[in-house]
Length: 336
Image (cartoon, rainbow, N blue to C red; front, side, top):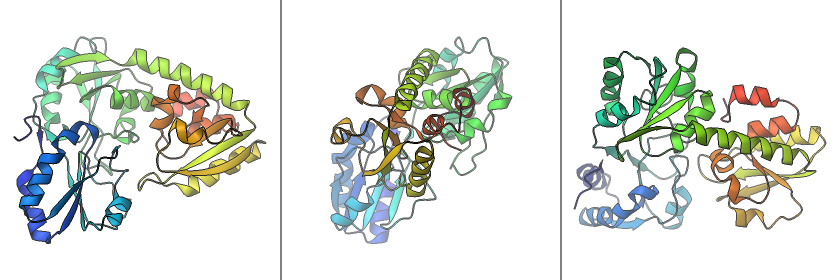
């Protein structure tokens, strides 16, 4: 049975495998699409290739299963749910299938209008799943007298597109809007928009067909981040984390953070991890705070899971005295 919510492009998948002559294919799916794994594997098998489904978590196009494909001798990766990130080299050929949502946005946007009532200038953002239907959301806003700003695509595939750690499309228009509307499922990306822009942010969720503000949750996160920074300032020995995922490997950035902290009188140990988990960090009892140069959402969304502060790069600059808290609020939690 085909998915009734997402276009998984089974015909294209079969044609690509046959055209490329692929013999062993690794399928990579975000959590919400993992139930489709066995069915997609059957499509690949019928196309004449051996299909293997990655059961590991997949956090985005920054988290390509390249090393896993090499270990398995796969000659093709099929990566679902994200668009290509140009700066990541492909050691194994990769097909990106965006899994576009086959849902109307109109009703969800209409339900979000009440939360947007006090603002006239609205910035519009979304994920790759809904990017091609943004015109529908824009028209709904225009019909009730709102003005709409959408960031140019830039290095993204689509205008208005955001990812979990990159909100440059929102930042590009934030000075011209009063609030943002994020069209998509859940709070994750909407919280990111709010943290990146310091603007009120509302969700229009077409999956649950409702609209709501994330401002209360954002304020809770900001208070928690201030508490983490204050606690980290007391630390004498930091662990600076280098991510080993394909799109989160920023060794030079980690070295720069190390230098700034050492200049501020802190001791630093560099750590390399694929998965930044509380269990992994518990193995280093002499370290009393950490800085993640991998995904910033580890610090922002999972803070309560860690026993010790795990800071973003910009937060580490506050500890080092290069940014004030007020400057961080203005600059945002995501790096330029």
